[in-house]
Structures are given as structure tokens and as C-alpha cells.
Image (cartoon, rainbow, N blue to C red; front, side, top):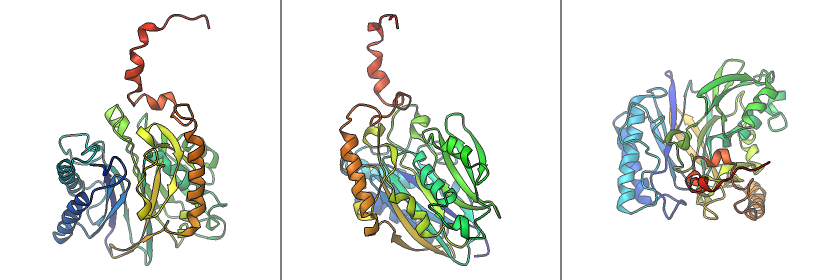
Length: 368
């Protein structure tokens, strides 16, 4: 296409079936009806519905640009319509990610997660849409670093002339609401210093140094920081472009062969392994988990989604899933003890401070 195309993923949890494990077909059908009408009306170029656990993702292409009010308003109205269906069927947590009663021009800061990018579509444009459940935005730090900065994961960084100049990471400080750009390989260690604290510093975008082309975009909304209390985990989404001077599909997927630990899981209050799974297995149950990630693979053709391929529906990831279960068995034995339970600074957004408050008058001075 001659004009830029915008890829948008806008996601929300508007009701769980049963508990936190799945999305009721009535909610998905409501989203499908609205998406089809939006495409027929010319608002969207194309769309696909993505699911993982109790989260629904509206995966869309359009020509409106990033942060376009008509697109965000459409997504908000769709989630509200789905919420009404969730209430009808008494789904758990109906509308829990909609933290405002009114749309304000964008869904940012209102609860839903958003990952978007404007691109000039290449002659071949493979993309992967990653959707995660029972975890936080910082869950993408490890795999993005591996994809775009680690030559042991991505040999293209060594042997592809379009990649040897490296990539720049846009890192957001979620607490102080600021951002910085760090470039690899020059800022290799500094990047790790920041993103190794994924509860605060998260990678928002990745750009190719040789031409500043956008390569990846993530959702960075943290519901607890918006609401000031625990309202469910953030369940982030991510768009990654691949091939032709970018990491190959196999290099994009490779980091998930190692089950790394993420925050979230039960009540958003525990660490657990992130399990790569097929669409059919993206329904967490054990301790409401363990955390899951699915990979929707598409070829874009003039803004149209060709696909998806279920990229984790592969026996090559059986060992990762087995190891996730092994880690789950071990870490669950820790029960309410850290590091299975999150640290106190993270627990302050749960109901734990309310429970601790009633003991304040019982404390006495100590000599230590």
C-alpha cells in the first residue's frame, strides 16, 4: 500500500468464563459482529479477534494512525457491549478492565491495554502478535532483549548487514512517568540495568538503528497504578515485525523456549513461569495459571491479515511447557512466602494493606 498502515491491538478483560480462565462465546460473537460492521463501514481495513485466558484482543489494521480517537472509541464501545453480554451471563469480573464510566478520546489510562505502530508495509510483512494472560507489561522485557540485542539468540545481529548496527529500545519508567532511548550495542549494560526491574521499567518500542524503522510495540498500562488498587493483572500484548533485516520468525520465538519468571498469576500477587501455548491450551486453570502466552502469526498483504498461524502449536515447545510445570510444582511449595509471593512494594496495590492496617495499634517499639 502507498499510504501508511496502522496495526493496533486493544485488549481488555470484560468477563471471565468460568472464573478467570476463558472468554464466553457470546462475548466473542459480540466483538465479531461489531468488527465486521466497522470493516464494512470503512473504519477498519481488516481485523482478527485474539484470545488468551479471560482477555479479548481486538487486532486491527486501519489508516487512522496511532492513538486515533475513532479507533479507540470503537474499541471502548465494543468492550462496553461485551460487558453487557458478560453481565447477562453473570460472567466473573464483568467490565473489570473498564475503569472509567466515560470515554475521553483514548483508552489509554482507562484500563484497556494498547499496542500500536504505523508502518510502511514491506514487500513481505510478517508480524507476530503476542498475547499474555496473568502477568504484567514487564513480561516482554526479557524476550525483546533476547530478540533484538542478544546474538546468542539472534545470529542475525552478527551476520545480517541490516542488523549489525543494532537496535534502539524506548524504555518507560512506569512510576515517574518518563522515558528514555537506549541503543544497542553501545548501551548494552545500561539497558539491562533498567529492564532487569520489569515491575517499573518496561520496553515500549524497538527501532532499527540503520533507518529508525519501528520493529516492536507493547502495551505498558498497569491497572494497579491507574486505579491505585488491585483490579486484575495487566495481561500485556505485543506486536513484533520479522524477517528482512529484522529477527527471523524463529529468532522472535526462541526466547519463549526458556520459561522465565514473571509477576502475576493468582490474584496478581505471585511469580510464576510464562508458558508458551497453543490457542487451544490458552485457558489457565492451575492456581489460575500458570501465566500463558500465545503467538498469532500473520502475513500482512495491503493491510489484510493473512493467517493466523498458531506459532506455539509446535512440539518443539513441549520441553518449555514441561519445564513450566516443573517450576510450577516447585514454586507452589513456597505458598505465601516470597519470592513466590510478590515483594511488599508490589503487594501494596492489593488488599494486603487493608489487612495489615488493623494491626497498627498492636505494634510496640523494639530495641532492634
